[in-house]
Each structure stands twice: as C-alpha cells, then as structure tokens.
Length: 499
View 1 (cartoon, rainbow, N blue to C red):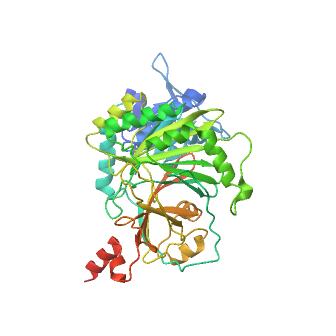
View 2: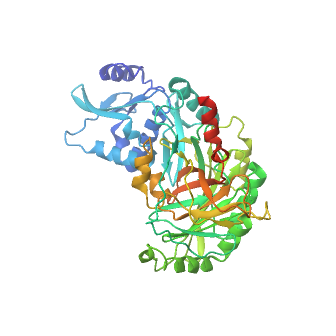
View 3: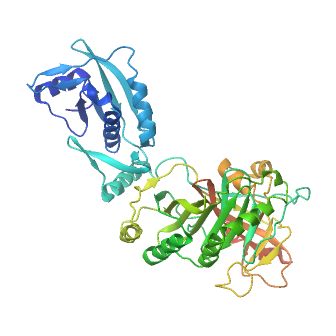
C-alpha cells in the first residue's frame, strides 16, 4: 500500500490482504477510546514522521472470523482535540504540528484519516516521565531509533537543506555605545575570588574561561542532556570527576565557571574547589545574596520564605560545552541535570556513552535546537568604567588576569538595539543588559601600570535551563596611547580583508 492512494483504495487493499507497512497503518476505533491507546497512536505517528511520513486510517477492525467491521465516528466526536492534547503533552516538538486530520466516508461509515508529514529538522521525540525517545517504523511495527539511525537522520536532512535550514544559530554584532554617566551601576561586596552581580527576572549569567566554540567557525547546534540524581555537593564532585575522566571536562578555575542565583542577585566563582566550598556553605551564600538585595536599584526584590537558590556550572570538554545545574531547597539539592552542547554529532561517541554509563543514566537523543544560540558582541574602543583587578584563576596565574568593570550595556537595551545592525533575540538582550558588572579577561594579561581598558568582545552561548542562561566570556584590552595597538583580533582580520 502507498499513502498516496485514495482512502477507499487503502481500505480496500487492507480488506483484501490485511497488509500494513512502514507508510500506512489501519486501526480499529478502540485505539482512540483510552488514554493508553491514544498514547500508542501518537508514538506510532511520531515514528512515521521520523521517516518519510505516513497515513493512519481509524475505524476499521478485522474480527476473529476474518470479517471487517467499520466503526463510524459521530459528527460531534471530540477525538481530534483529545489527540491534539495528547500530542502536545507526549511529543517534542508536537507531532500535531505535522499532521492533518480529516473524516472520510467509506461504505456508509464516517472514518478518520490522519496524514503526517516527515520531520524536517530533528526527530520527533515521544516523551514520558521526562525522558524523550525517538522511534521509527520497521515494516508494520514501531521500534526505537538506534544511535546510527539518529545520525543518518541528521545527515540526510543536512544534505537536502544545507545546515539544517533557517534560521541561523549565531550572530556577530559590533556595538559602539557612548559613555553614559547617568546610569547608577551598583557594586556588591564578595568573598575573595568571587563576584556578586545583579540580574533581573528568570535568567542567569555564568562566567567561564571560554564558551567552547569558535565564534567565526562552525555553529553549535546539537544538545545531549539528562536528569541526574543530586542531593549533596559530593554528588556534583563525583559527576565532575567522571566527566573529567571520560570526556576531559576541565574542572580547573581557568575553564570551569559557576553561578549561584538567589532572587535578583548572583554569586560567581571559578573552579571545582570554590564551587564545592560554596555549595557546602550554601546558607552563608544565601545570607550574602540577601545582604546584596539591600543595595542597589533592585533592593525591593529581596526574596523571603523558603530559599531555593539555583546552581549552574559550565566548562570545556572534548565534545564541546559541558554544563550542569541543581537547586537547593528544604536542606538538600535536587532537580539535577547535566548535558553537552556540541558542534556536531560525533561519529565516535564511545566516551560520551561511557560517561553516561558511569553516572548510571540514559541521555535523551541528540537534539538540534532551532533559533540563535550564540552571540558575539564586539566593542570597538568602547571604554570600561570602574575597572578593578581581580585574581579569579589562582590555579593558573599568581597575578590577576581579569578586571571587574561596569557592563557598558547595563540597563541600555534600547541603545544596544539602536546600535545593532541585526535583530538580537530578547533572551540575549534581557540577560546581558541586566547584569551590572562583568569580569573581563585582559588580553595579554593585566599589568600594574594598566589604568584604562576597552571592551574587546563578549562571547555568549544561550541555553534554556531552569532559567534562561547565558554562558559568557567577556574580554578586554588595556588602552595605549597608540590606537593602532588596541585593535581587537576581529578588527585586525577586518583590516586585512579590506586591504
């Protein structure tokens, strides 16, 4: 049977020989009369979408004596809405975005026909108990996709549509903001080797040694993640130890950055030792952030009641960015997750499988997420205000490598939009424009005689976690009297290309 045939032809062929295949399925009405049946149907439709699409006709039952019974639908039947609700709850992205449901007439009976198109960009996942699985059709059965079949899926779509079609996944933008003195940029006290910043709303910023991608190279497009059992800081220590051993995730203070957020304030640190210390002394961190709420323009947003700070960390691995998150509440850590953001699906992912086996969890399938995930803001000769040297990486350098300075875009979203040549998504702008101060890595290293600094660039990598999260790496350079000496690497490349 071919799905391109008419409904009557498909039904007649089923009546004649009872054959179903990877493109066509015929089911009795009972499959949509229970929640379990509707879920089974939705899973089957997702499997069709993960191949070439398919057709399901409902309301035809072959009885034990071999005769075929037609089961008509009432004109006011609400099954279409029932199926749509199940699809939106149990598939990601919703399979209902790819189907067309219509009622057809055959032998005097009003039957249902569902045609589902093939998935264009990523496999449709059937999600249950928080975990998603990709399926496909093998003859007349539904089977789980293997790792190689998932890779083949992406490769076939890539060959047909280039880099997975629109939209792009990265932006590079130069901004030139005039120095503004009317913005009150708050500063907060912090322990040695830490920073406290303000940020508004359900978003976070994590400062790290790098964002594990080349801002002018291939875009990061793939995600692999899973839930993890977390109850104590020791669990995070074990997770990072396994990640370091299996995928060379770097736990040092040069690469690993973390943020603990409570209310509208964030504590930032670097390295595994500082992370574990802050997690073990989380009540002290909460007190510190509560005190920070008493300072600055957002003091009215001090939190009360049961504190639930969120911990997010990020570092570099052999497969790209490795991240983790957890939340402290009621005296313990829970809601743990970890994952990877990759430039591509690796053909040899043995180490990844070994990592997930060691932490005793099964990851979801590789996912390709739409939208812009990376932003590089380049600053030209944008001056930085109120710079203060800070040694955030004592494992690597005895002297400071960073300066903490005011964020030029703090509370200046409209100015950034006006100066940008391209449209920048709000999830980048809302986060970067609400952070009061940033730790800038000084190009060439900080020297005691350095007094003035200019923004070089800010790498930003977006990830939707418990809160909208940006992993960012700000860089600056020390100003000199010779303007030719303060060109950023990007400006140098631009000059070279113009010549």
